[in-house]
Length: 383
Image (cartoon, rainbow, N blue to C red):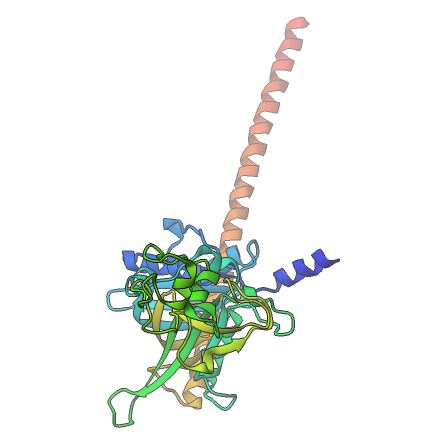
């Protein structure tokens, strides 16, 4: 029964597929790989796009991936001569689709190279990241902002605070909504979403830094000391301050200087010294990638249907209603033409089959006639 429950829970977990469409630069291909790692473990990490399928529509991808793989979200990257596009589509419910422009991005490898002490481990990706949405407001915000927040949250598994295993929370994905005035006079407002990816590290506090090194199995340089006690007290055999000991500060790199990051762990957490009921300091280490996105358009379907929001085109209710009627009329005419074409094709096929059947019947009649004639000639010769 427990295995059945766990399998049902896994079926309800959001699963994503990050794909690239069309011809893109090498950096965009690397960005696709970085985004797949961000969505681990519930993503198609080694998905290969065939060259003939790179121009396929999102609806085509959804029909192929949502059923067999259980994909719930499609993240598609494409590129043209002016900018990079990123679209997030909900499947298999046929939408909505959020279209973004990638204003800026930084690859994971560049983020790690910029750090003095980078932290990266494959064990970080064994469990899904914790999603955090910041500055998206409450229920009174604009509908497109609320839809963005809901979409970002639903791309990651929900967390049950009462039953969550603390050691499974190793990563954080932050979506930060930024709204600024582009020209400073308040006339044009620029809306951006910043995406950041962090690893969570914890280090025990309330313990001397030298002892903390020993607890965390970080063996220091003891070549100039006669005893381990000299390392703890900070003196050598001549009672002078040990030169090998860094006494500038007792604060470790993983321990924040303010006490707002100090928490009492309700469970044991990853890392030596982070025992249950132990006071530890939490620190976020950026993993990458970084993205800065601008919402351009929201469509009701999979890159089709009504335009629910557009950043550059503003229409009144009457204009939107008229456009919707024109779209419905156009779709109706398209369906009628399609039905007529299918009927003509079926009629031509029926005529072709009828001709083939008539030809076959005439051939059989000729063969029968010839056989009858041969039998008649044989009978005459016997007489």
